[in-house]
Length: 282
Image (cartoon, rainbow, N blue to C red):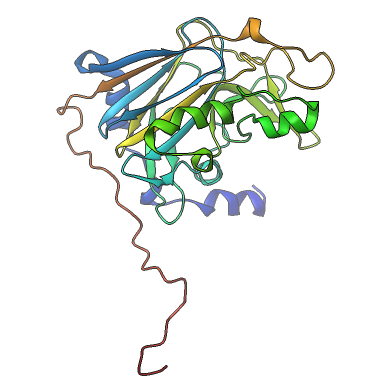
């Protein structure tokens, strides 16, 4: 082990990052005791937002074959607290799976959700270095599309998410870096981001447990399963490989949640070293 590896492995450790695998394993596996409270399908090239109360599980399903989906998460009661892809990438991994946690931004910094089931968790690393469910890339958007093609297109993930959250009082400025669910990505030998065809099959799912009351939004990517390039050589409209995504929300039985409590906020006292003068000193 070289020094860089040792420093990396020692950088983020301790009880604050520990996960009770017995608890979350039960949540993910003891499905007979769940109560389904909501179920719907998000059509191709669209987005939808919905609530997932604390203590509930949300399952995303490939109901008709492979399809990439872009996920945003907020604290329902305070949408300034939202999923932080970069810190999740540091604390967990660039590609997440069962027992990884989805962390929120500063100054909140706590797990918003914990992944409890993932039928693609054994995909591992393919021959090109690809892995699934990534925090490396971000959502496709109409601004990049205009820059690269000179044309406008209103159904990229950024736009889908923007339309989805409007009924909840949020705007384009609240849409943030995503978790790319079912997406296979990696970095090549030039340290450049690449995307591959989605490996999901009909019935694959990705499931997470809400640690606090959540507002969740999902876009069914206009690239579909990403088997057709959106830009560059060979690019054409890939609508033939676009498919819907199913969503199910379940209440977890209280007996399974014995000992669980919603995570609190950091104990940092704040002020960042700033100490305003009292009126006597002014």
